[in-house]
Picture 1 (tube, rainbow, N blue to C red):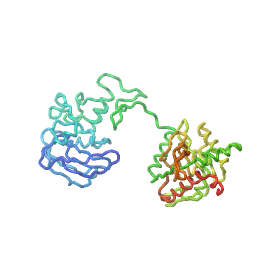
Picture 2: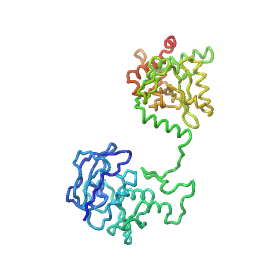
Picture 3: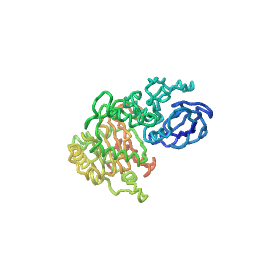
Picture 4: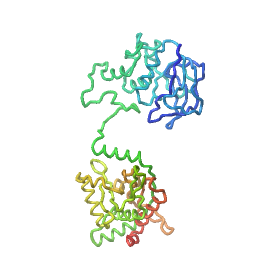
Length: 434
């Protein structure tokens, strides 16, 4: 008889600790392989932890409420009978990186009534020849990762002969069966997808199509991921009556060519940034400073066939509505045609995103790193609105502002958003102050 220590396994998804909710066994209990021994709570969920080997419980490492780190002792078991070396389990367990608290396999041992209700009934393994079974009635597998890998790859463990000690089935045995199926089919050729790659690791569902993450899509992915990981952002929004803005544009159009609605809103945004410079700044983490920028390079989010890009109107604070309209049209056309320069695509200080052209009303946009804020504008649509105590149809648009909470608090963000909203609702008065 030898005492084996089972440590808290890899919890997956970046989790490194768990709180011990309660023990499901006590010292002196006889447990079987895969029998739940403890219930733990992580930041993601409450899960049961099954034992990777059977025997008599010798020691419980911790009490309910204790927080255990991955790799710390959880339970000690006196192994009985030819259950195989636990060292192989440790080696296999540490070799994997999946969520090992899920898919530990099944056991013929009878769990408690509560466990029986929560766990699916286990298929009975077909007895194999000596050297490929454990205790004569189940495949010689100790690692839950090996069982999980076999299940996802569609490999029948009963068909394998283990190459480990005492016929133990190891990861390499499953991988070998995946690469060279017993049906005699050849290994995947270059450009093909192997059986293991054809299934999603988390869900076990078949993978239909794989799209390479390259080029612009890769650049966008890296930039947005960096934004989410580095910027503590918050979002605030407001519904705005844009009826007067549309009426003003209609009047200008009667006198000649009128700027687009986006250019008109852009002018109000620039005016707002001069009053709230915190939102037109940079966070210099190396120097521990927030640098307010002198001037505005206004980025305009543009959807193209290759992905989302943000060309910037340089020195936008020097332009009026007509000048902004011309530059916005030029830049968006260049971006969609693939002719925008690297400087134009990387020089923005604040972004305006008109997602209304996509037919949606609102969005919690991701800040275009290293900027500190982005203003989104939804579609303008007729909605019921209360005016002077009466219900009338008005042209309503939703504005949403995502901002870096390091540079300002809600008061500043709300002040800027309200400034732009007020300008849209009363554009004639706002233009008099520009």
